[in-house]
Figure 1 (tube, one colour):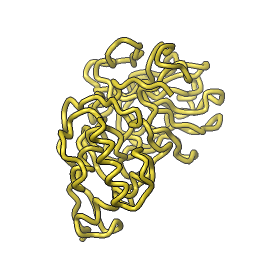
Figure 2: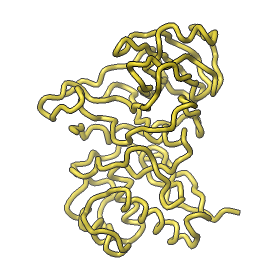
Figure 3: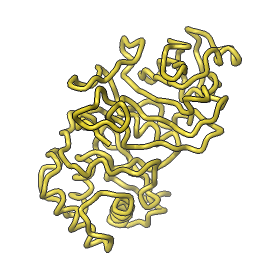
Length: 297
């Protein structure tokens, strides 16, 4: 799948530390690598017209109930979307503007939801429009935003657009994945395999450090950052702190601004869905990796 390297410039969304999964009757399913993916789906870098600005929460049947992820003010109902589905716009009390696309038209009326109404986390907002079959989630800094924006090819990301990946992972209580180049460099550096600038682009030195880590950890040495590598590195980070993977908790790192874009062709090799890193939730705020683990009491 074609993907713009600009996706790595997007700051990870903050918001509620434990937002509600919006599809309570649907087993969580989403692709962590979908932000910045080419559209129309399956396009090449040459033929793509725009970039995917959010994450799709898929597998929702017709009529599935949709919940508010957090306390918010309703700013838009039945807004135009795709495949005859509609969107709901929310401004959260935590300073986010949420776009939830995929509603059946008028379904908010069943639950008494109106424009300008305040809703609580977990309140029912409406129902899934069957042919669409998912919720498309976009997140922005709230500020003065009242609608979403298209991320056109050849243009920078829309103002205030945030990466929703860690937000979605927090919904399901999963470990935060090491998606961005800086996070991966920091993990490899913490384990003693990477000696360069963690803010630099992915390079041959990065791949060699990754291969060295794979060899040391006793897993397949292929220079690719896949689920097995991520799990093994998570376990190694926990053990380095003197506790087993099931005993460790995490402390959040300070945000890191202006991450460097990646040129690593293998960087988008993410897992569909989510995973805990060897049972350890590696927490990240912004794009920095929190490597500080503490033993549970």
